[in-house]
Image (cartoon, rainbow, N blue to C red; front, side, top):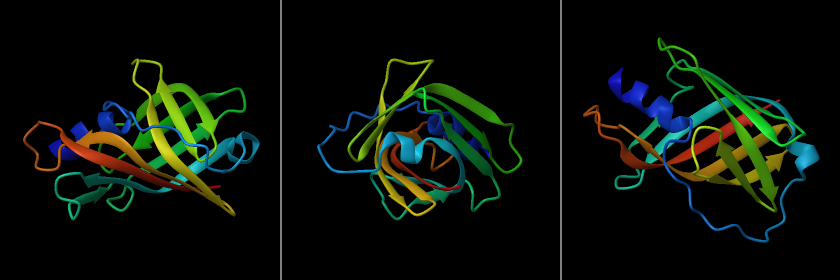
Length: 147
């Protein structure tokens, strides 16, 4: 459980995501604004990409609300752990979404894709304690959400 718990705060954007934006074509802000339910909250180890953790597959739940006014609320309830809520601002630039949590100066960037009612956010720099030693390991964070 320790690895999951320390990873939760990381899901709430404790690592810096410093990916550069690009001019790719992506969904519009109007298309992705709304309430999304996660079907995957996955951490992938940077040093050992075969090491992955999916908090939803382990029995957790998560929602992401992207308000049209440019704010977000992310709520995560992992299996057998307390609910964690994160808030902040979001911006969309082509196929990059930037989440800016209220509690930090870091910006976390995901590649964003919309296909029907499925929103995929992938590749944000993050951290997760894969080995339970209470030391975060570099990870990529991927979210798959549906409405």
